[in-house]
Image (cartoon, rainbow, N blue to C red; front, side, top):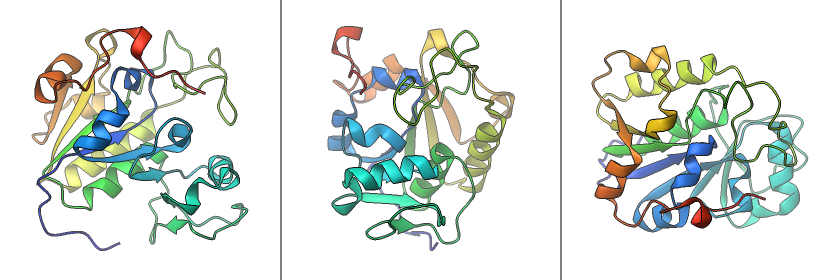
Length: 215
């Protein structure tokens, strides 16, 4: 895939589905930059680009017809029920959806990319995902998903695109940093939600009542 060599002065926001992502208002982000979303996020809002590489998830999106009027990107796979109106990575990375979305955003020439919901760790050893207990997702009481590959893939993107500053927005109470991302990587910063709110006033839900509920 050809990279965009021209700098993009608007920010990009890459949204994973760790539960910390619920603190940020995605519709605010959509109005203030370009949003790269993953998997079932289409159930709640409409990111500028939706990335899904799991075949079951792609087929859910196709069944819903979301791909007909929105940018949906995935990897070529024989198991996809209908390839019409989908966009395919060529060559594809063979990675998880979140790191693939981060890499895809990075090819578009942004100076700054903010990352949400890349929590990596489980919740008390259990599955950490805002869509837990819904169709095509594991149960909230299932064991936490191994995050080693996800962290390695994230690290590869950040080290490849040295001209981009990445901000991983984290909750101080859930501030797990994988070893691969805790080392000194000069273009990666870990930013609190409070500090992000100072940069983008009105972006963070003030309390849990106003956080978006999942379906």
